[in-house]
Image (cartoon, rainbow, N blue to C red; front, top):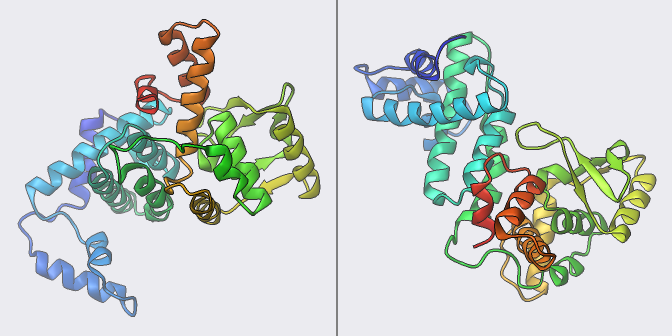
Length: 302
């Protein structure tokens, strides 16, 4: 589909618009379609169309933002938007520090975008599984926005992670500023000289390289050798391991994403001690953390 974002989102909105039609009838049809699956309010909402102008406007505004984000990633056709585009957008919104309620609303709108694309193209598109993978991380990051971000003693938290693979992933997050999903699967061919790791599963799809301490790099090499060249850690299991470790370390569990906050704050202090001006340090950290918009990094340095 070609055209401006406004035009494309309007076409998608029309594909699932039922303004003026019976919402009750639509809900009954959704219940029937679910069959033996429990007809929760969320499942019914996922299956129904748009019945008011206000709702249509709210959906379309979020879809425009997702469309613009996808364009920045190189995808101009909204019918070809994938789960990766949606995840990248919602990750970006989480990192910008919006309210959790706003994030959840936009996540619901993103799920409905899949319905619209399905209706328009005749091919099943469902973003909800990908969105659900992000919910725990969003809750961790946004539930208490006014608290100080980052662990008081992240190294002590990591020392209390009992599972060695999860402990290694947490160390890489803290030392390299990686996102959780970027390092819960690492292949041997991603290792580079200078204790660096080439990240390929990045937000926005643009590879970047992170550096870790020599001893961490050696542990990663050894682990990859023992695992047949691939380190895999289930993200949900990893988050649970870090949560348990935070409790043992006497800290409030603030999620794996806070290890990125620790990286940003430590790196800023390191760079300014070396003589970099604050603006220069800010720019370098933005590059190292893979931010499309440098102003997002300021959120990590508050």
